[in-house]
View 1 (tube, rainbow, N blue to C red):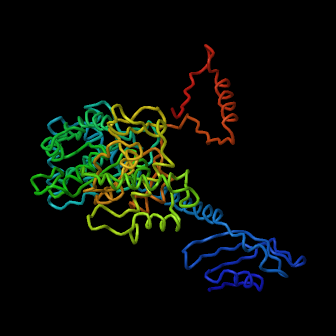
View 2: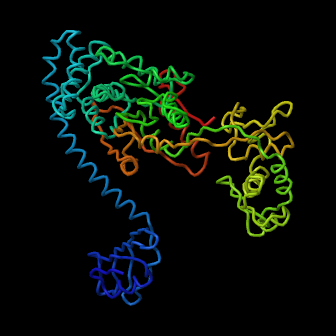
View 3: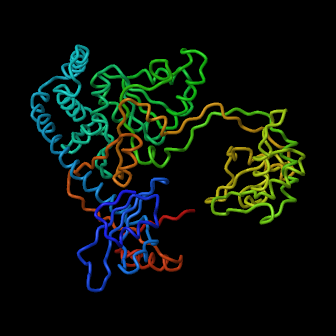
Amino acid sequence: MVLFSLTGAAIAALLSAPNSVAYLAPQLSNSVATGKSRAFLATYNTKTSSSSLAFHNVDNNNPTQGISALTMGFMEEFMTGRDDQTRKAANEKYLAELQKRVERINELEASIEELGDDEMVAKTEEFRKRLAKGEDINGQILEEAFAVVREAAWRVIEQRHYDVQLLGGLILHDGRLAEMATGEGKTLVSTLPCYLNALSGKTSFVITVNDYLARRDMEKMGQVHRYLGLTVGLIQAGMNEEERKKAYACDVVYVTNSELGFDYLRDHLALSPAQTVLPGNTGEFDGFCVVDEADSVLIDEARTPLIISKQVPAPANKYRAANTLAENLKEVVHYTVDLKNKNVILNERGYKDCEKALGVQSLFEEPADASGAWAPFIINAVKAKELFNKDIEYTVLPDNKGVGIIDSFTGRVLDGRRWSDGLHQSIEAKEGIEVSEQSKVIAKVTYQALFRQFSRLSGMTGTAMTDAAELEFTYNLKVTPVPTALPIARRDYPDVAFRTREAANKALVKEVVAAGGGSPEGRPCLIGTTS
């Protein structure tokens, strides 16, 4: 234990936390006359690596009173607030430095405007030669390349980068995440660093969340790159191996996060380099990558695994036996049900009775036929019995051709969707229909593992500061907010929570009426629902 300037009352209080390092600072409100003090106590548990921070009223005559009320909330708020202040100050200093580069880019605009179309294309070859000779890509060539892209965008698609968009491009090139408000032109911003980094001879990747956005961005922004002499590729669902290989060989590639992930997995299953499609025929990534809607891809879906599997025969007899056994097990006696997390937990008696019924030493032992231990079969059978109801979570397809999953929002059957890890087969056994083949995972990767492989990763989104700490810790991506080109006219109100659905509905109607909804002179109102 380490103590710093602690009073007798504080020392006695800390004795109740033998594994803690603590700091106690009496506040100015300390009252010697009453024998009580207002104390600020922070503890760090050396065994659990957890910290807590709280204010406590300490009675000098009964020093241990109140110390058991330590909470985590204040510590978290305090540290987060300090981090936000530090991050904001660092970003302001960083943007001030970038503004100097923006001014130098603006100074080049007049001379670039005088260049003809052929001279603009020649600039690309000039930049490539200079980089090949060892010139620093972060030096003067950066400012020249940005000025060239700005002029090219104006000539081809009649869109000129604002100064704040140049700032965004510089932030992306520095391997950061640019937070730009909706409507500020993030797609146009990406042309700047993608062009510059493609000059090095390595592919620049632009990652979008769906095929439509990938095609839209390629068709519009690709014009700028093609005008300057670069090749542009597009990856879409349904493309064959040759089409993908040709697209990935381009200087700039537009692709969705899922298509990129599955191409990565397929490359790692390839038997020879000739069967790979990613640049370099190595199945690995190199070069520059900018992720659009980065908070969604890098945070919300970060741990969602992309899986390639194959169908293998399922041990039908084992699923049926587990179903019969589950029907005879009783809740509370043999297991508990966690409705919130859709899980069941066998207790000690449940395990022992199952082992006795099956005649095995342990439910976790792998049998000689390599069909898998009994534990997951029984757990899935109990889940099918307790948590999955016919015509609510699933339905039996016509002619008993299998089990179809019902969408909880639309009530429709999700064609082609199946539960994983043997749960689908357990439900089929429960319904007494033929047990289908099960999937065996042969390749798997998460988006987090996928994008951390890029040597130069950047991103852009409209909402990132709330996830700034996680993005920096996980991907080493510092979040930098980009000022808007014009003052924001939109008003953003905080979310409001209600205890009951009835109260929420009344408030909703009140807001619609206040906006004039339903009247000829009123404003249109869009109300979103879950189904």
